[in-house]
Image (cartoon, rainbow, N blue to C red; front, top):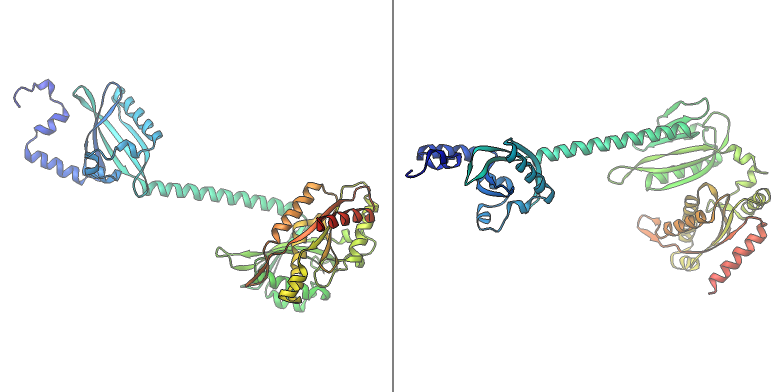
Amino acid sequence: MGDIETSQINDYIRLGLLGKEDREIIKLIIDNITSGIFIFDVDDNDAIKMRYISNQGFNVIGISKKDYESGKVDVSGIIDNKDVEKITNKIARSSRTNTTFESIFKINTNKDYKWLHIKGIPLDSKYEGKALFVAFIDDITTMMNEYEAINRYNEVSEELNVSKQRYRILEETVEAILFEYNMASDVMIFTFNLPNNHEQKIISNYTSFLETNPIVHKSYLGKFKEAIAKACSEPIKDSMIYLSEIAGKGYRWYRVVYTSILDKNGNVTGVMGRIYDIEEDIQDTESRKELYKVDSMTGALEKHTGMHYVRKYLEKEYDKESYIVIVDIDGFKNINSQYGHAIGDICLKKFTQKAMEYTGESGKVIRYGGDEFIIFFADINIESVEKSMKELEHGCNRISIKRDMEIVLKFSYAIAGCQGKTLAQAFEEADGKMYEAKHK
């Protein structure tokens, strides 16, 4: 050892003074520790310099000893800047207070991100006047991924709980009958949320039940069964009006809004929706039969019925904001010529369904004749009307005719305000705008 004084010997130098056998024992221990071992010093300016990295240390941080020694890779370069600052501050504080430090940080390896845990302690003595540290680093990626997965699971569970609460509040505040039909089991569940009626009915063998029980009026049974069957065969969202005695009050008018239920693979498993009692709404009109006389092919209100409704509304609600929209399907004759009248009829029916969907409760869809329709919006502002028409345009970009056939259905339309006008005046204004648009 020559000229080294006892006071100059510190822990780092002692490693080099050990005998061969002792060094081999220490090497054996280091090589079998699963943690990466790092020895570094810190000067008075808190600058960190690496002095030693064990083989397992290189494995943990995901870089090769060769690249490190050649200077191709800087350990701090693979750590996020925020984490570098955080760890440096902790080491500096540990150096000043002679206490341990600990941190969790993320590194970016060539393949992926890794989560690492570091815990270091200052040694009793200094090396070349600098504080000497030994630190142990472990790969905790699996644990952190599991932790993040648990947190995400808890977040999703919380979101589901909130959704359930919202659904329950909606269920309790909206007077309607909820239903859910399961195709595989052929079971229909009705949940009543009506005054003095909050029961639940479960009907097995629902298909047979419809044939033997007059829950749906016979004049609407075929249309009702067709709607359910269609919603079970392809994903759709639709509505219809029909006569039923589902609530046990005799036959009354109901509006059902329904949608297909899909599994995670996009396959239809059933149908769900809401049934609203609209008997009183219909009773407010002069003639229930006249009001709901619909075009047999499209399901829209037929011309005389629809225009009668608009005329009476404008007479009664003269000062309310309302709008009439004339709609003309573009190139409909070409569709008939190219695909046949049967496909043309389907297009008219699909357009009506889309129009009813996007105009909502405020809109009445009237088939005026051929490929021309009238949509009447009651008690609504112009922005909402324009938004509904834009949504209808977008919804008609891809009309599914059959499983392997889609058609782009385009149409022209003109809007006229009805406030303070008669039906004839509003219609003349919209018709004039349509003529101008067609002959630009």
